[in-house]
Length: 80
Image 1 (cartoon, rainbow, N blue to C red):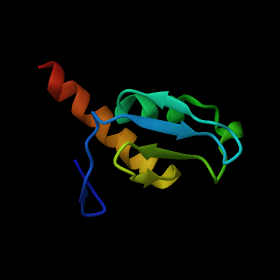
Image 2: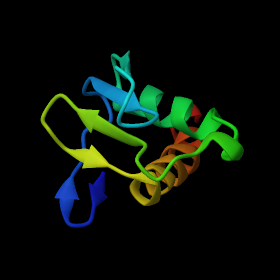
Image 3: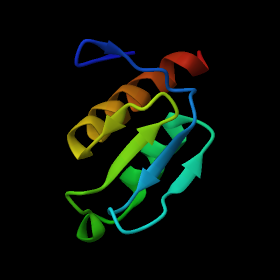
Image 4: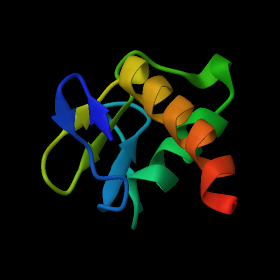
């Protein structure tokens, strides 16, 4: 998928950091990290939260939300 003019591979490994003080949670696929981030209650959302991919791309909440929207809308088409 394209995000901000860059190709984003949803199948690459990624790590979700809830804040800059934790070690992060590793996921084999960016799409899994996005789903995990979105599942966190909004009361725990921190501005510093991010997802960092194996290729070095970093995504904050705005990008995580866009990625989640893309994943949600793509899933029904993939099941057909």
